[in-house]
Every structure is written in structure tokens, then in C-alpha cells.
Length: 422
Image 1 (tube, rainbow, N blue to C red):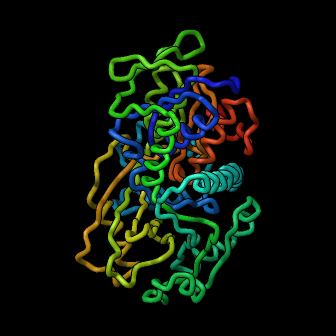
Image 2: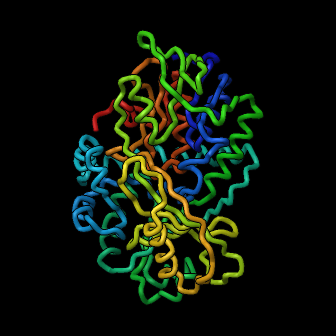
Image 3: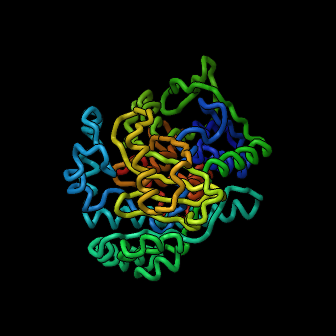
């Protein structure tokens, strides 16, 4: 790799691909972005949970997960649902995930993810400082609400370890929770307390992605939409072209930002990326005329669901479903979000309609994204961000730009190598 201007082909125009294209174009590279959708941000970036959780960016693979999985097995309303038809596709990924469900591995993974998350939020501030991007940004922190004292005590016991990793979290009692978010007053007696990350933020990932894509295009980035990505052709240890809707696109370097589909495209090169698609759901409602709507970002720890205020909208997001590449909306799973909303905010108008959505989160066994070279010497991976794509997007793009320029990134790049042991 060298720092001179290169022709770079970015595969994918979600928030990861668009931020990558923006950072590379800023370095003077000639960038082409390819996506099968008619515009940017129309798959996993479309209606995600909206939380920029720099201080809550730990991996899913916690010591509690194996027991929870067993407890939730077969329950359609479980926060984490494992479909039997998905098990054959998990024969490699599943054991790798379970190996990461120890306290020691959690600390190691959380340390790496937190370092990238804090870099990413700093980079996001720099980008939005350079450009007037409107994306319903709200900087009021994220509050995790605990219903039981046992749950709160368990979370509070881990605060010292979390803060030692660079996070900033504080424990709140019931009164402090309601003082932080007054809309919780109707269920005050059902709350034990909360864990508050005052530095975290929320914002509409789709609005940001579309705005940044327009800025990138104005700076010379070429976007090819409605283009089906086919086989990557390699000669020796380099990719020489990629088949796109029957034509060949050539570049000096290629950056794969295809989320869950990265694993399928990579297989044409003989690469096995440790990514599994985990389906998540969201529902978005208008808060116009609803005086009891929350004004900050919340997480219901009991249901593992988040609530984010986006201007005059409220978005609920959560649940994890292991169902392969099934992108269909499950009405029962979507209904769980509305049930959680009504339980959390009893004053929610019952006749208010919700817009439901589902997307595939590209999860790695250890929760860290895949950043860097893999397989052919001119292929870089920027994928596997799981639920943290929005949080980690700008930091991941910075790492890719640094690696392409042979600079040392601000975080330990080897911790995110696509070739690391899982």
C-alpha cells in the first residue's frame, strides 16, 4: 500500500461504505461506490436503533449469554431468538461466539471496541463540524433503565471495570432516573434505578448517510446504484476486476463494506469471514401531540430494547433473531416493540400507527468489526460491526484510510484484523 492517489472501489453504500468513501476521497483517492439499492443507506442503515453508544459499546458475548440462550430457547417473544433452521449455518460461528462468552474475553473485546467507539465519536464530531449535516442529533446521553434491584446491582458491580476501559457511566437511583427522564414518572415505582452514559448521543443514521453521500459525490466520488455485485476476479494475489451487472469495474484497491453480504461475496475469493447475519427490528412512531413522550435515549434492560428520540419521531429497536438471511418482517417480533413502548410509556396514544422495519446486523463472534487487509493484497475489509455500525462508522473509515496510506491508526489495528483468531 502507498499514500499516493489510487483508484479505490468501495462495495456498499450503507453508513460504513459512505463514510469510507468520504474519508478516502478526502485523502485524494479516486473513489467509486457500488450498491444494489437505488440510493445510499437503504439496508441495515435505514432504520436502525439510532444510538451512538460510545460508552456502551461492549460485545454481545457476555458470560450471561449461554444461560440466557438456554432460558429463551423456543420462546417466540425472547429478546434473542434462535431459529432451528439457522443452526446448520452456525456450526463454525456458534462455537467461536461461545468461546468469547467469558469475563476475560469480554474485557479484552470491550477494551478494543471502546477504543474504536470513542475514536469514532470524535471523528463524527469533526465531520459534522466541517459540514452542516442535519440528522436529528441529540446529545443527552443514554439511560439504561433497570426494573429489578438484582439487575441494577449486577450492572453497578461492573461499572468500575467498564470505566477502567475508558467508558464513562454512572449509577442512578430511582429518583435520579426520573429526574433525568421525566416521562418515566408514571412507572416510577416499577424502576429500581439506571446506568447513565452522559456522553453518548443519538441521531438518524439514514439522514447522516444520505447527507454525507451527497457531500462525497460533490467532492468527486462516483456512486453506481442499482448495480448487482458479482464475482471478484483475481489474478495471483491481487483483485483485477469486479463484475457489476454484467460489466467489469477495475481499481487499484477494493474495500468491502457489504455488511452481512460480505461473507458471501468473500467466498468467491476463498475467504471465510467470521460474520453471521442477526436480524433486528425497529418501529418508528410520530410523537406529535403526545405530551408524555421521552426526550432522551433510553434502554429497557428487561426487554433489551432501545428508545431514541429523533426530532418529532420516536424509534424503538431491539430483539435479535438468528434466522440466516431471512429479511422478512415477523409481525409478532415487531409487535414486541409496541408492547415494550406501551409498558414503558402507558400514555402512548393507542391509535398511533408505527412504521416497522427489519435489517441484518453483521455480527462477528467476538463483537469486533473486521478492519484491514484479507486475502488478496489489494482487498480491505470494513464489515462485521454488528449492532454498532452507526457508532463505529467514522472511526472504522479513519482506520481504513490510515491503513491505505500506510499510517499507524489511532487504535490498535491488529485488534480488528480480519485474520485474527476468533
